[in-house]
Image (cartoon, rainbow, N blue to C red; front, side):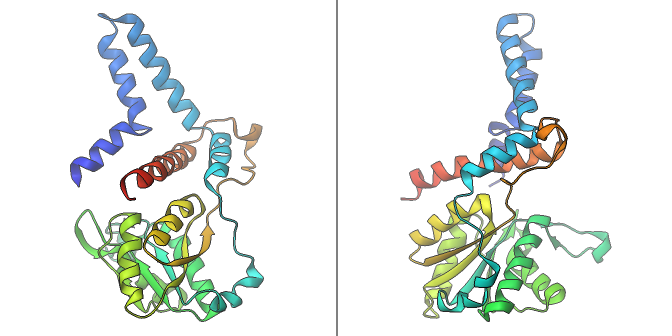
Length: 254
């Protein structure tokens, strides 16, 4: 798991661009033209990834599922039998919370939306997410605690074994099918929904997509989003990771 993580960080942006910049320095004397090419690709790649306008347009290609209309929330019980909210990592040992692990901002966005849907529809909730780097508590447990403490909503089931989106789907489906449930509302980021829906359908469940956190809307940044921002680097990294995942899942999980 650790080697896979390291390899992923080095081969995908922004890591690969730093590798190219290091390579340009290493090759500058022996192969100056190759070094110059590595420098241009590395610096140019970092610049492109730092632009909010790139986030906006890249997200639109991945966000294929529309948002649920708020006046349809109450009617979800006619279309599904449970709500599944997917984990998105954790923040470890935050002193503000007495050292108790907390959901990430992305996970909290999903939890908040799932709580609203559950209250409006009356559907039971399942949180899905295993151990982050092998140490407890699970992402599912952390989200369940947040649902209870922050939003007054209880999770009926916790799926605590998954490490990937594919495993989210497989293990959640196994748990829910034992309860006779085959129709689910899936809550995750809008740019992650395409891969999530495919994974849950491959696991034999009927999916009602409930995407949140849309990035393809007007960014409202100065100069139309052509000024570099640190936040955009992270967002573009997530989008690229998702694009690679979409292709990889269809190759390796059929």
